[in-house]
Length: 132
Image (cartoon, rainbow, N blue to C red; front, side):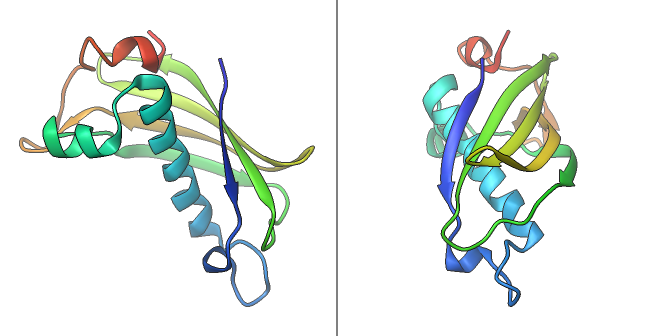
């Protein structure tokens, strides 16, 4: 099942050439992951980080930038869970503006104990939303 987070390209996202500066895509991707956890997994980042002391850092990221995005574009960040491990999840990412693909990538997240600084198994209440 695909999850889509729609995001507007804002002035803060673009460089002097008027296109999205590539690190801003990663910030928008992180926002899409945050939306996914809130809407699909059922645990938002505030509860996950603050109350539960869990994080989901990105440990691997690969991207292909296929076409530029500009101020005012509405981008659809489509996330698909490709694999779930004991403490990791691999996602495929596709970013589109209308029918044009702007970016494709893969992201690996790991469930982490923020206090201990080490990975831990996905909590039972979160696993169904992660795709297991």
